[in-house]
Amino acid sequence: MNINLSILKNKNFLLYSTSQWINSLGDAVFVIALTWLLVQSTGSPVVVGSYLFILGIVKSIFILFGGVIVDQVDSRRLMIFSDLARGVLMFLFFILNLNSIPPIWIFYLIAVVFGMVDSVAEPAEITSGTRIVDKGHYSQSLSILMVTGNVSTIIGPMLGAWLFYLGGPQTAIFTNGISYIISIILLLFVRFRQTESKNDQTVGGILLGLLEGFNCFIKTKIIIVMALQTFFTNAAVSATVVAVPFLLRDMGYGVWGS
Image (cartoon, rainbow, N blue to C red):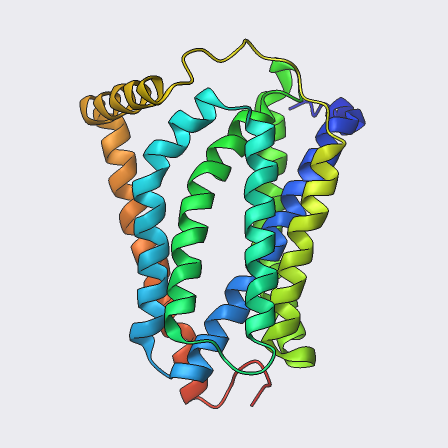
């Protein structure tokens, strides 16, 4: 198999992929910090599970709207807006954690906001990837983005635990906020190819697009099967995410070691 390295000479792709890598790395740092913060402050797996449930259910509901919104609005602006919204939320959460641990409803509010924003950001990221490389590089660019994302899931938790150990959850939360700002700066230098002008950006047009998307979903068996597979896979992973921190705590391990 011949590997074409010319994509690595694409400045726009390098900026975009770096932006996405830093973004996902910051998210991985935040997940480990938030999980241990909830474990230490509440000691309840129900609270941790509730946070993940709210995040997942909100994203599942609003992802239908997210795809339609991406079809109507420039995906680059959506990514910048979503990074800005999440960055501001992280800095506010950082301030709330300076003196004491915020009440539980703050964590649930973060789950709702992140679920809504992610439902728009993720389709926008997929769409934007096709506007910075040639058609012949679509598969290769997607593979590179998937690799960098997987690297983030490995490095991110270790980095998050290290930051938690050195400076507490505030340091990890602030780092995540910074990652969004860096992502925005990199995106501002990316030049996307112009696409055809969006049509019918009225509320009626968006609702019509949503209805068409929903009809396509319920009438396409393969999409339903893939959605169910993803649902049960994520449910199993989430159960593990909830259980492992409490198991480690009971064994005498954690962010600060045994």
